[in-house]
Each structure stands twice: as C-alpha cells, then as structure tokens.
Amino acid sequence: MTEAIEFSDADYADIFQIEKIAAAGGGLFEDPYPIWAELLAKAPVHKGTLAECMGFPAERTGEAFSVSGRTYYSVLGFAAASDVFTRKNDFSNLAYVEMGVPDFLGDTMLTMDGLRHRKYRNLVQEYFQPDKAANWWKGRVIEDLIDELLTSFESQESVDLNSQLFARVPLHTITKGFGLTVSEGLEFHGHMLESAQAGESQKALEARGRAGLVLQNAIQDRQARPREDLISQLAHADLEEEDGKIRKLTVEEIEAFCRLIVFGGSDTTWRQMGIALFALLNHPEQLADLIADRSLMETTILESARWYPQPLFPRRVTRDTQLHGVELPEGAHLQLCLAAANRDPSRWNDPDSFDIHRPFRRSLAFGAGAHSCLGQHVARMELTVALNAMFDRFPNMRWDPSKPPPYLTGSLIQRGPGELHVLLH
Ligand code: HEM
Image (cartoon, rainbow, N blue to C red; front, side, top):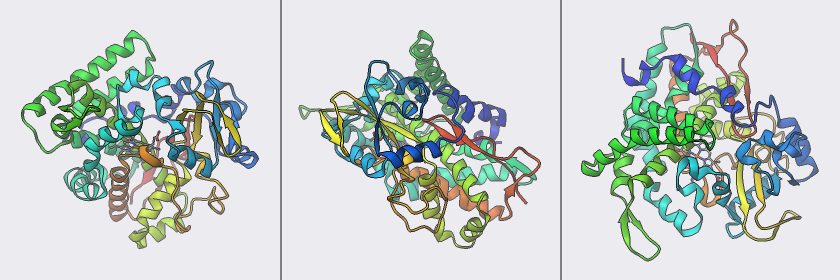
C-alpha cells in the first residue's frame, strides 16, 4: 500500500467534512440560492454583509467576514463583481489583511497589491501555466495518483467518492508538487486546520508553529539539494526588491507560500470535484453525452464551477467611489457573492440549471484580474483526469439507493458535498 491510500477513510472524512468546516465559518445554510436570486433581482449591490442582506445577523457570514464597526456592501451582479476584480485602483486585497488572514497564512501574494503582488506571483507562475498542468502536474503527479486510488476500490460494489477519492486527490497533488511526503502533507494540513479553528488564541499560534516545523526540514533540505519540485523552486528563486536588489526568499516567506497554496488548492478543489460529480449523476442524460464525447469535458468542468462555485470573496474600497450606482466610502469592505454573480440572468439564460451544452461564457468561479486563481489549470487538470478515469473504468456509475441521498450544503463562504455514495458496476 502506498501513502496515497494508507490513511483511513475516517481520517479523510474527519478533515474533509463540509458540515464541520461550515460550523467554524458562520454555520450551515441549506440552500441560499433563492434568496440570492431575489436580492440580485432588486439590485446588483446592497449595503450590509451578505448575511445581513439575507435577513440574518452579520456574524452568520463568518467571524472574519463580519468585523464590528466596519461598513459592508454585498455585490451580487456579474458585471459589478467583475468590475471590482479589475478596478485595481479602487479595490484592494488589503481586505484580507484587515480580516486577519496574515495571522494565519503569513505575508502572501493574496494579501498584496500592485507591483509587489506581481513580483511574488511571478516567482511561481511558471509552475501553474496550462502547459505545466498538462505535462508536469498531470504526468508526474495526477495520473498515477488517480489510477492508484481507483484501483484501491475498484472491486468494491459501493464507495463514498467524497472520502475515498475527492478528499485525497487535491491534497496529495499539491503535497507531491511541493516534494513533501503524504504524511508530511496531512500533518501540515491538520495543524493548519487546528490553527484556523482556534481563532486568534495562543493555541492557534502553537498549531501554526507545529505546521511550520513540518516544512522547515524540507525547505532546508531543498536549499542545500534542489530537486524538481515547488519548494526547490521557491528556495532558489530570485526576488527583486523595490530598490532593485535581488535576494532569495526567507524560510518564513517560503512557508507562507506553502500555506497559501495548500489552503488555496486543496479544499477548494476537493469541493469542486464533488460538486461536478453531484451535478453529473443528477443529470444522467448529460452524463451519457459526456461519456460518449469527452471533448465536452472542459466545458462540463467550467459549467459545474459556474453553477456552484465557492461563494464569497472580499475586497476593500481604497478611495471613495461608485459601483453600479452605489456610493462606496473609502475603507468599506465588499463581499463579492460569486455564487449569485455566476447565476446572473442578464448573462446566462435559465442560470439555475446545470447545462453542459449551454454556450460557454466565462464565469467568476476562479475570480478575475490580477489575483485570479493561480492554480486553476492544475485544479481543472485534476478534475479532468479524475472524471475521465472514473467514467472509463465505471461507465455504469450511479447513486447508491441504499445510502442517504447525496446533497450540497455549507456556509456562506464554503460550500460542497457531503458523502457521495455510488454503485460502481
Ligand atoms: C476548483 C478549485 C479552485 C477554485 C474554485 C479556486 C478559486 C479561486 C478564486 C476565486 C481565487 C481569487 C481570490 C481573490 O481574488 O480574492 C483564487 C485565488 C488563488 N488560488 Fe485558487 N481555486 C481553486 C484551486 C486552486 C489550486 C489547485 C491552487 C494551487 C495549487 C490555487 C491557488 C490559488 C492562489 C495561490 C490564489 C491567490 C492568487 C493571487 O492572489 O494572486 N487555487 N482561487
């Protein structure tokens, strides 16, 4: 047995459980989409946190998204949210700093703006280009991993794809890309989760320290003996400072990169994989079309991300400005509801329907502008390889009627599937 499968389903079910994650982030909302549609029908931009606009107390958006004393606006229209992502002189990622993200992740590209952001992002951009996803990530990491995981359960009649496949693929992919062992990756992820759930306490700091220790050995090793992996890339990259001086990243800066990429890339991709499967198995006629014609795969993945994305991302207003007729004061925080924007009826016909045949129009599932998702080509490659391999091996895959019906749920920040029990043969 290799590392990808030696941890039990219970280990994964414990780390990757949507209800547990939602409880730490404002609590569960069964189906917020009808309320979002009503709000969007009234206006694209509303005053208040997303929870307040929906008629709930502000804190139901989650602690970090509802700091008292701050003015909030929620953006639900596609054109308005796109404007916020691209009007970089009016809107800034400093929102993440004020929400305390650096206490958890450190100083990362997510919390930087302008030239500094570009310089940091450029240090790793090469590893996340489409050709690198199609060759390096796919050939070196993703294909073997998925093949091995499918083989581990192919003789079973019924499996829970959430814990047996989807929870494992993204974390293992990134861990291997970094050049860490899987047990190091899981240990790191576990300490970071503990730190996130402990808020701003001493316990959070200690957990973050333990996560750091896991990485420090690997970083020191790659500083001395570079290999072909992301940690080596970071350990030997040249960063140009504002005064033009060139220097290497510190160990703390490399750790911060790793924290961001593990967190940005594992939980989001895990949930989107389950969402894509959920949508396909609930639309058997579209699934049959996809199985027969794999050239539909790319639009299928993008449609599932449009239909049910990770819902909420923040920005800070950097100077008094207007957004689609609403005056925004400097210092206000915006909550961009990508889930509502991705179902804006002014951009998509019948937007609530999942339809792999609809004419393609870019959604905001991976953001837009300078901070658009760094790992989107890797995420899409993980989804492509996983879905293709599953439907090659198990073309009769269907829901297991003896198990509780699958569902999507979550908070206003993170949404995804519960258990996904399928019959394989
Ligand atoms: C389907 C899975 C994924 C989704 C839906 C997703 C979504 C997003 C979104 C919406 C943003 C923009 C955040 C903002 O502008 O505030 C973002 C940024 C980011 N994502 Fe992803 N992501 C996914 C997978 C990944 C993967 C696999 C990685 C890394 C391997 C990754 C790394 C990042 C990083 C580093 C950023 C920050 C980029 C920057 O600030 O310049 N993501 N992601």
